[in-house]
Image (cartoon, rainbow, N blue to C red):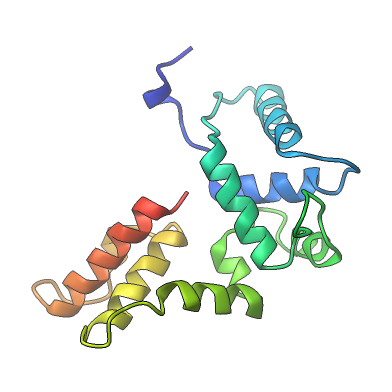
Length: 163
């Protein structure tokens, strides 16, 4: 077994799909999802992954906000089943942005940017890029510009708060 710091993290789209699959079972809970993920990895002869409670909780919150799981339990909704069918390779925040509830929630999270910040939009775009799993090198602005710095700051903040 490897040191926990060397254990790879589970890819977010895989985690979201696993939560939705497990949520189709009656009476499912987060522990069932963790066990199923570990079993799938073992069957595929893949390395064990680190699955922490905070990451699971955040993933579940995102699925709930988008209406893919019930608000009070790990139960996949009809919308969640359709999303799982339409995105068999994985669901992440970029897929969840298709749902107006999730978009509104993301906008509400970033609505706190002070109006005196002229680069709030670039910061928000960087934050969202990190949430979508994009790299810092995806920054669309020219180096040595305020927009580049704001996007990078948003990306770093999003990376810290992402899965």
